[in-house]
Image 1 (spheres, rainbow, N blue to C red):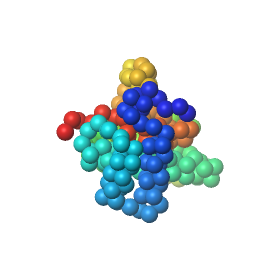
Image 2: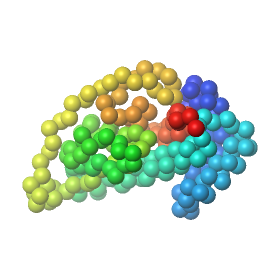
Image 3: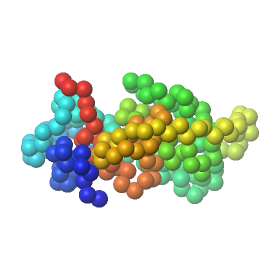
Image 4: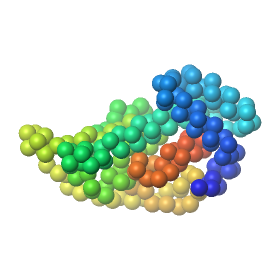
Length: 205
Ligand SMILES: [Zn+2]
């Protein structure tokens, strides 16, 4: 995948991307904290002479948070979609938060749908840069015990937005930040999140 125009405009190169991928991988494998990643961030920035937008800590934090969460979301999604898991837990329930600042996804709290419902492909968390929502697996036994029922199908509510990476006008579900609409199973999802974390505008310091 060639780098999208807004990544190039932000001074991002394939080599820079690769170094961040390796640094983040190290953090995940060794359970390293944000403080350790901050050191790697400094080294990478100097090595590539990269001029990023925003304050150092804010940019490094966005990169660390978005990418570690995307990794966990993807791992969880993979576990939840293994054939045995789908058999045991044929329903999923959206759970909002805890997100700081609030992610405003409480409109979806408790939505319960079959795992194959297309709603999940555009609403599986994270749904914006601060979103720590998650999806709970539900068995038929739990449905019966707790007298749970499948939710009415939520409206699509598509809205127009600008893709932060390509600059193209796209349609995303209302409540989902542009760039976060793909399912964790989407090929290239992790690279897209990494590029977003390098490019998304931050408040000027
Ligand atoms: Zn959320």
